[in-house]
Amino acid sequence: MSRPIYIFQSGRLARKANTVYFENSEGVKRYIPVENTSEIYLFGEIDLNKDALEFFAKNEIILHFFNYYEYYVGSFYPREHYNSGYMIVKQVEHYLNPQKRLLLAKRFVEGAGANIQKVLSYYLRRGADVSSQLNVVADLVKSIDDQPDVPRLMALEGKMHETYYEAFPKIVEQEEFELKRRTRRPPKDSINALVSFANSLVYSTVLSSIYKTHLDPRIGFLHESNFRSFSLNLDVAEIFKPIIADRAVFSAINKQIIDTADFEKRLNGIYLNESGAKKFVQVFDEKLQSTLNYKKIKRNVSYKTLIRLELYKLEKHFMGEEMYRPFVAEW
Image (cartoon, rainbow, N blue to C red; front, side, top):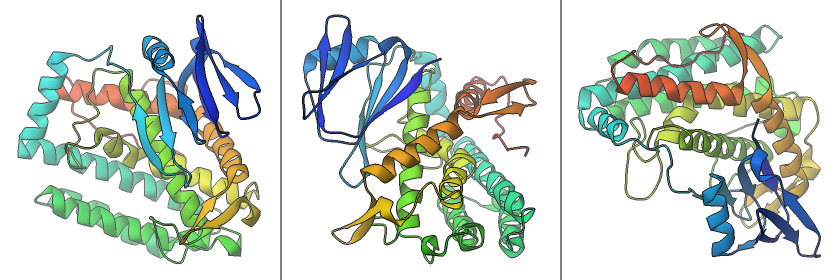
């Protein structure tokens, strides 16, 4: 099974015959097992040339670039090998039809809300006093289908996440990681830095999965399609952020894998340092590769496979074979 590779050092990616290698600033080379690599996450300052990019494109390997502040800045997205003209037409039809677009947008928010409830219920059973937040989120989820358009649906989703974040201090067991207010650019404290970093990893993971389908990542339904960025991966990521990103954040903190020494102040914000990013990526990747029983197909699958299955469900929806319903965790 193909796995992602994470590179934190600065250096260069270069091709040598039928393989590629990473060479750090000290001249140490690390060869990359191309046949077993799905995507590469680059966090350092990286040099690469056209020859290397052509090799990655030929082998269908996506490169995700993050800047000095662990912000996702973009991807090298090779020429689509699986794109289908028919599927793109159906995807656009659903975007241009206001009712069809709104229906899908509601399902993405529904999936996010349902999985937020699963996370809160999980920690409620373990003694966290999150019942009030759980009740508010449940009420908001019930009103999803009453929203008349996408902007008001997104406003409701904003309220849902605001309520959800109020529960974080009751879930996180380390006082130094108390979430007082969600801040993004820049993150003002350690837990905000972790949440933002985890979310960006989910966005890029979903984007990599979309590449292996017939879907076009530029055509989203909840998040506006525009000239600048991908949006379908943001839509699908809403479903998985609570059960992958947030669970990884809680695990890293409560198991004391991450501590305050893994962060540093840069400009006006707090960010993970290289040590902290490495530790969290390991927790995140273990979560992605962990398995659960998926009753729909009656077998155990990894969370990463769940994302791919979710995209196949969207393809069936666009083709009119089966109405799309979001994945909801069953633990």
